[in-house]
Length: 129
Image 1 (cartoon, one colour):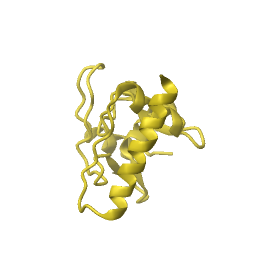
Image 2 (image 1 turned 180 degrees about the horizontal axis):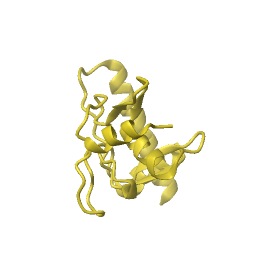
Image 3 (image 1 turned 60 degrees about the horizontal axis):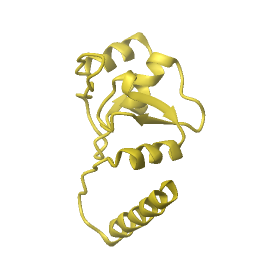
């Protein structure tokens, strides 16, 4: 899937530390603090997804890549796991840590999304209690 050149390019944009530390992506981001990687064919990928593919070989259809460390810029494969979107939301609810995405311009639509997210979080917390 990824050429050797792609793999070398990818890992050159990672600030590797110990296996327990987050490995921040040093390349470009998508504006929501998730790393973006452009392969040799011009396809743009989420950097965290590339990290899993390079280690595991694939991502199962319909699965997301979860940041177990809650650090959206981290690409340490030991901090990443495949799962459903429900698993991903469950991670947030269990830890109480929600991804912080920079908001460029407040808008009515964003306020509605934030309100809906709060309502859903409160409902989910009641179900978990």
